[in-house]
Length: 305
Image (cartoon, rainbow, N blue to C red; front, side, top):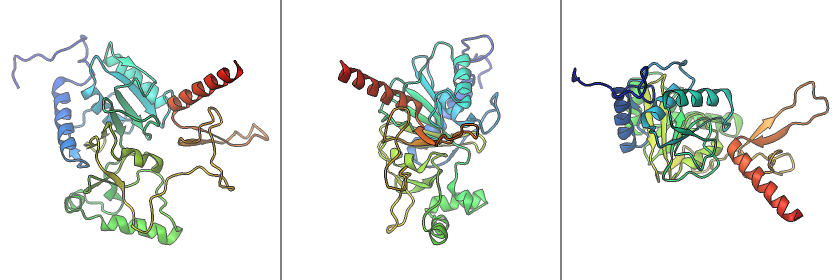
């Protein structure tokens, strides 16, 4: 390191984006390697952040290493812009990146950091999606040794993982994995696509946006580059099935707020105090729900005009 080199600082206390320039460069180099080898878990020196491990430190370091003064940032947690985790991370970025724009609109954002969901609104080539990941390796379910797991990934040996899926079929007549579904990237590496539901896995396939996944606790970064094959690990005679949100009569539930019938829904169970109230369903993606509600309101106003 050049002893005469001074880190550029926009404020007296911190560099822009909290991380120093050396840390950002190291993360960006790992990101480039991860993009070059789709699905490969690239190790990096995960820094200490002013929040506990498991609260999005991996995704946050990736986002802070990429964000610039002209970016518009969107932070969501399980589809919601106003959850505690999303608000806390957004406020931290606003504090350490003075002058950047933050938005709740998926279309206006250039950088999106998400936990547990991929936005319903289709992403574009000008956007980057960063997913927070607790455990990046799907083979941890069947092999405790990291050294052995690396060999299995290199050889494309996922037979024991397929055996685990087959055992589900034998015992339960279906694959019971509801989230973190093993997904093969570009025909080779199988990744843990973060705790997104199965509903979101097809959105990774041939995505126009760059998808980066950061695991701070496990110190790994991996990527799904734009227009890359992302296929769930399945058997030829057992098709991949996503959540369909149908009732006993085969009718699909709709969002109680906006009426959407083409989005991932959260089940809202009434409290015990609300006697007689029935459970309802609502869009998980708050921005998409707001868009559909605004469109529905506009159409109603036009019909009544």
